[in-house]
Amino acid sequence: MSLFAINKVKKTFSNGELKEEILKGVDLTLREGEITALVGASGSGKSTLLTIAAGLQSASDGEVLFEGKNISAMNQEKIREIRAKEFGFIFQFAHLVPFLTVEEQLMLMLDVSETKLKKEQQKREVENILQLVGMEHRKQAYPSSLSGGEKQRVAIARAIIHKPKVLFADEPTASLDSKRSKDVMALIRDITKNLNITTLIVTHDEEMLSYADHIIKMSDGVIMQD
Amino acid sequence: MNLAFKEIKKNKVRFLILGSIVFLVSLLTFIISGLANGLSQDNASLIKDLPEGQFYMNPEAEETYNLSRIDSGIQEKLINDYQGATALSIQMGFLNDQNDKQQSVVFVTSTESEIFSNVKEGEILLDRSMEEKGIKVGDRLTNPQFSGEFIVKGFVDQTKFSHAAVAFINMENYKEIYRVNDMQLVFIPKENAPEEITGLQSFSKQEFLKTIPSYKAEQMTLNMIVWFLVVISGMLFAIFFYMMNVQKIGLYGILKAIGLKTSRLFTMMWTQMIVITITSLALSIAISQGFNIIAPEGMPFSLTFNTTLILSGVFLVIGFIGTTIASLQIRKIEPLQAIQQGEI
Ligand SMILES: Nc1ncnc2c1ncn2[C@@H]1O[C@H](COP(=O)(O)OP(=O)(O)OP(=O)(O)O)[C@@H](O)[C@H]1O
Ligand SMILES: [Mg+2]
Image (cartoon, rainbow over all chains, first blue to last red; front, side, top):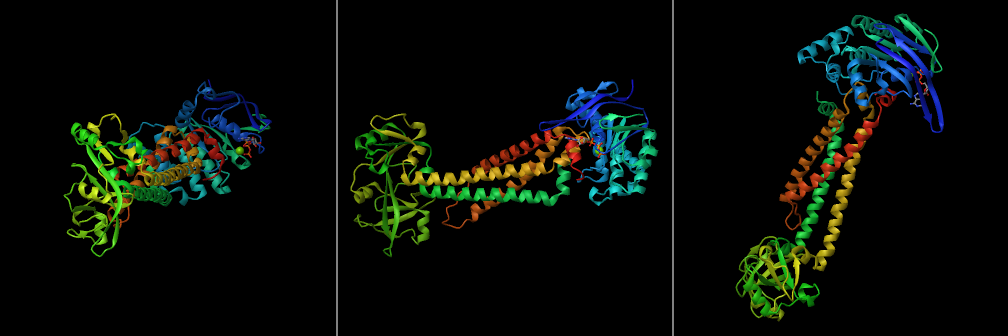
């Protein structure tokens, strides 16, 4: 049994009368502890696939299997629980909570994922992860006072602090310049290797592919080749 | 981690603005209803401040108290049979003060009673508002229909009828002024009041108030003003709380995406709403009660603590409804929608 797999997933959006099939039966198995990069033309359905995989929207048909269980058949509360405890996400924008300091963002994530740690241990955990992403000096800062790259590093910290089994990232470097992009990718690679996190990452950027173990290409709602 | 307070702390200005709207609107409602209630007191405090009980008048009067005549035999019997029963009459009139200035008053007289003030012949008790018109204890007042003089014995608080000051006089003097022998009404306190008395029409206090033509019309207008205000300000609250939360859909989406329980989001919204509303209401209750005390003499303003609490309760419920409607929408949103909205 693989940790994470997608079976014949279809997604149809209806635009009034018009029905458009964006995903036309996608099969995909993630290799445990590795980074899988998903590439393809704009509009080919990458983000749609990623968000379905991450339980952020439902599939029209097919299965999303996490540890052998079909999450697309679960109720909202079950899916939420898996999202909170087992998954991490990074998006193009950091999407930090504007009224929480960097430290509080991470404490909240530990809280939400119900990590059974004492307050002291939580603080230490936050400290460690901030060190890892090089943001420990901005612990007390609010998102509005951080640069784009800094926000993204905090978002990465938030995505992994609860030690998820699977990490989903949708163009995590799109809002960054090329130097920062490389830093962030290297960071994602190092962290996921260290913590043995299985990662699915969508990217447009050819340069970023060198950080992936494995590349799959999508075109027009189907996977082209491994 | 208490998200509700963290957000309030970070966005003080935004919550302060919302709070001041709640504060101003509720203060407006309190003050207006205080004024409306004051006017209504001014119109009928003589009756409104009585204990609960039944009024009886002659059915031939067709619900017009000053056309009613209670036969003296019946009156005698009622006073003997029912404890606390009082016969009374109310009639508009005027008094001339020592400078021969005419003052409108309402003459009230009654049989011996614990509820109404009784005076000896030639004496008079006046509503406190007459004091402001320069009348003092010991003054001698006259009336063209009255052969003698009234000596002012003192003043009583909050006793008005039809916006005029009440003047309690002795029954003999009353009979002389109005050339009548019978009283208009009999009042019996609730605990002793019989359901029916044959030959008489019975009115509860509220029903009796409604038979006073000026009171009924005015009361309708005042009630209308207050309820419109309550409804509109209530809607304003609901809309404000709704808007505040709908604006934050992006934020709630992110919190949902990272796995916050919906119930926790609801708690956050409710907590914020309750904190803002209660603080603002407390402030406006304090100020309106203060106004109650400092309101200029002669300005009819009457706002009981009870009324304020009831109105506050209404506002709290409405704010809660507004927040809940918003939260039902937020429950429906997919976290994805928020993420696709771009950077917040
Ligand atoms: N909620 C939606 N309703 C209707 N159509 C949608 C919705 N979400 C996505 N689509 C459509 O699905 C198609 C694939 O979108 P998706 O975002 O998955 O593409 P993508 O491969 O991520 O593209 P990009 O590289 O530009 O991010 C697009 O044509 C888009 O318009
Ligand atoms: Mg995309």
